[in-house]
Image (cartoon, rainbow, N blue to C red; front, side):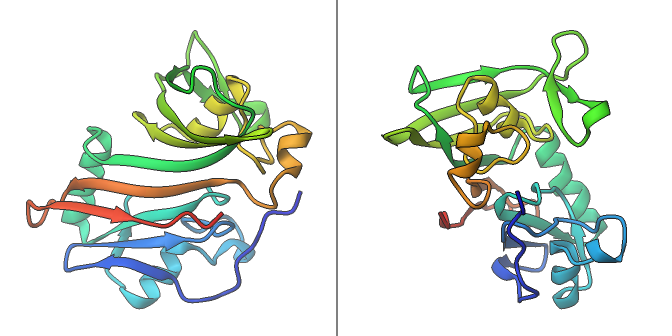
Length: 215
């Protein structure tokens, strides 16, 4: 399956102030540069073209769209990174998945580790896996698919994708973890980082950032 690749267009800025920047990353765009000249185009490079002091704080999978934060300067990078590490940034995703989760609201607690022979894939490992917790809520179901709110309480690589696949509800369009029917159901990964809530480290005010789901 060929991932959707966005053209070289301007980034959509959701929030900009003296301390931080939030953008809406399109699906198919890397968060940071990869190896090789063909992977130089990324969200970080596009943001830094507008704001040279922007520094990476976290990442989204290339196939995932939605809210991505950048810090303006080293001090704010440390502050925002600390919020992520302490779980003080509330994240919410929207995903369309195969089937209907049972129960309709629940928590997935499955430890994850890199599947080294098949990296970047991740896998469940009860011996050496790192604790990984995802809460989900079913918003709607129709036919063979459902729309969910996902709240990751930890931030492991591919966490949402592996957790949903493991309980039998893979995210539609997921080239890594979906079965053929779920993969073919969408032209892109149906996963979107829709909401971020946290206390602004610079002002002390509550900051609420939202991005409409594009699918």
